[in-house]
Image 1 (cartoon, helix red, strand yellow):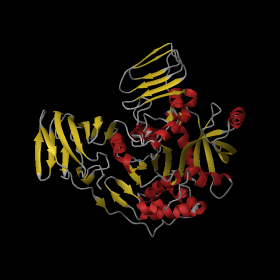
Image 2 (cartoon, one colour):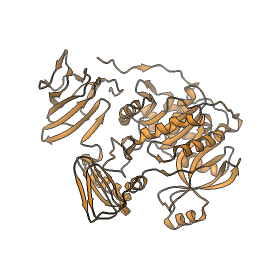
Image 3 (cartoon, one colour):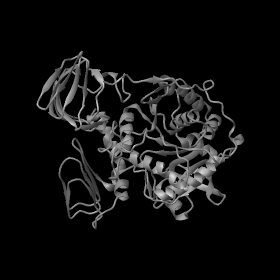
Image 4 (cartoon, helix red, strand yellow):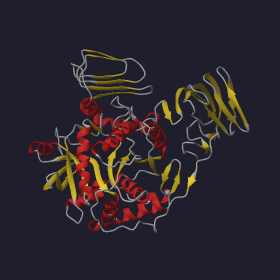
Length: 511
């Protein structure tokens, strides 16, 4: 049996906000540790139907090499190859609904991350501020390598070299971003105009340009002068916080108050929910970086990253990042194409065939199919908005839903009933819970189930079943060495996933 989620005492900061020195008084150091910070709070709609609100693109295996979150953390852990003293425990900033699956994916890599759980999304500046506050409290100042969880960088060695250069500038008190050399006139990215050289390894930031029109983007590409803004930053924790305190005092004070009043648990650190709601929503660029470009005591620096990079913000960018056949097609899953050219076709649950078509994206899942011209992939979010307006469940979750203990597939549903195929991994367990509006029948089809029902506890083998009445506390566990599979039949007036009251949970989800 699992124990309730532990709440631990932690050292408290001196007052609401940490005591910070002004940026210009921070002496350069050469022995600072390096801490990876992964911003994993996005929900993403542009890779729908593969990406959903409850299973966003950073948790999806888009490129066939593990989830984007796993790829990002592996990339950051390899910074030790360039002799950066990278901390073994990266800081992951994400929402509560994604924490458990994120932790499971990282544990598959043998990595135990430190999670900061945002009560609500407030954009990247507050997310980085929470990570910086934690880093200062957890061992003192550190050079933070901050990046989104859902980017692709093909040349990891080039990334390592760029971060090593950026770290040297960050140690002396600069705030550094990595700049990508444009390969096309892209209107979906921000641009950086570089200024004077810094030590021959970087450039000062002259200004930021937010998503220019196509004519301007073409002129930037032709000039060879501008960089794409990658959204990857390298900065000392103390420098970020002191600069934010100077430039955005309201954001700094609200973040510090929410962090100080938060709670530490086995699931991660949770800032105070009501106080965090008062934090202004702002990006790193708008809150700080654009102000650095206008001059000030803290220097903004851009380090070139000479590597194939993409934020994978559309299906067209996924097609562009993957290897293609002689007709320019990318296929994933059970796909057959005849006389098709320059298409991306992904089949998740059945055979998909394409005949005599060009420049299409086709993505099939168990509950939705997307067909879109590759030139219109940015409009996918409009379709997702229309589905949301109709309260379609396809926006929020897949039919097959991943959980930290395994997964379930909603194979049938009607008025007052739902049928699920549930898989519980070896040694895993669901929370101790009850439902106010539904009863459940469990039928084991493979493996052995350890069932808690009220005050009872008993084993079920294959072809055995049990009944969980409405309002009774219960738990399902797999004590065996093979996955446990069962069929669950729910019946009741309301069958939504929010009809769960959790009392104990090893994954930190207890109410």
